[in-house]
Image 1 (cartoon, one colour):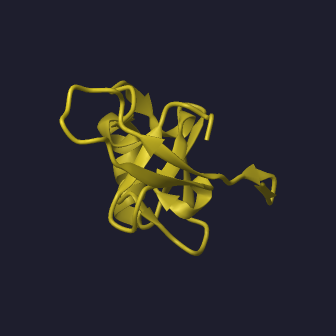
Image 2 (cartoon, rainbow, N blue to C red):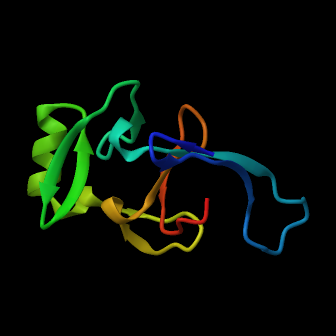
Length: 111
């Protein structure tokens, strides 16, 4: 489904195969338009956030403090992809909301 030129998709993702006695639970991921996400607070908003340009990439912050953190601290511009375990640049990922309390950045654009 396409909305405002951006792709929005919901899907279920299971845990990677591991040795466990109970079957893996699945959680629903909702792909979010990055403009509505604070990359520092990892919170989705109803209005577009402030873009922060760093080294030719665009990140988004909800307030002056988050915008400053994105400009000054490289660690704030990265996250860990929960599927692959790889360190990812938030500007090059897919923003996904798992639940209201859980939010992540995924390396894959497949969702």
